[in-house]
Amino acid sequence: MAKNVEELFALQPVVMKQLQTIFVKNRLAHAYIFDGEKGTGKADIMHFFVKLMLCEQPNENVPCETCRNCRRVDSGNHPNIHQIYPEGQFIKIDQMRELIGEMKMMGVEEGRKIYVLHHADRLNTASANMILKFLEEPDGEVTAILLTEQMQSILPTIRSRCQHIKFQKMPRHVLLQHLQENNISHSMASTVSMMTNELEMAIFLASDEQFALARKTVLKLVEAIRQNVHEAMLIVHEEWLPHFKEKSEIEQALDLLLFAYRDIVSIKANPEAACTYPDMLPLFKEVALYSTYEQLSKQMESILQARASLQRNMNRTLLMEQLMLNLQEGYTFV
Image (cartoon, rainbow, N blue to C red; front, side, top):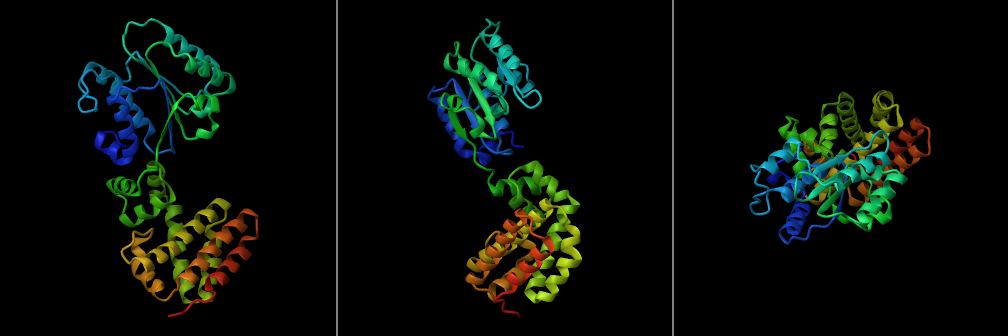
């Protein structure tokens, strides 16, 4: 993921500016919560912020990267930094006891002490209460950084004592750039970047044969729906139902189908719109030309209804047959 300052700014411009402002105005809080989904750069930006707080010669609110402290932060050997990860399912009270004991010790290293709790939402009740007391009465120059993907699972009493730093989803254009740097085609990158905001998952999907098959089957079905209901039903029985047997596979396929119709709506409004399926642009432009906004809206609503019916365990063959009929209603064939 992102490592240099330029990449971090591209990934989280608001967060980076916020942290640099905190630093330059010397308004360091005793505790922060870095809150954001997986893949939003929390760990990388935490590393940047820790290094900035400890750097001996920061330049324009950026760590110098060459001083003794910067080198030790990068190597993971700085004695004033303590990182805690869950042991099994939870961060346990023994881990907190050890951490607080270390933080209160008179160490050989002067300066700010920093502790980082990864997956802070996984503090159990006892460990949460112990860290709460330490947050209420910090000892000296101490900064806590709590990383979480589940902000609501952290005790309100802990949240109220921390400054909240909200991480936004990775901008799609940044994710697309990373994917293409990993030799993923523009068409596939455009599709997987709609399915997930997390780089590693996007790379996995782009190389997954099952996902490639799902994408191909969905696009084949879109073209068949445009022709007539019999072609669509044939694709459903010969390809869709045999390929998508698990509920999760059908959910994913319905999402891919919905994105196709969203593309058509976007193209109808703006022929230069960015698409989930740029390789289908000629077909989608033709479909958009002969479709009304009302019809496209009804088609997308039908897909959403099918997804809801799937959650109610409706028979999957009947579900897809009904969906094909609904997608055909009012269709102008060309």
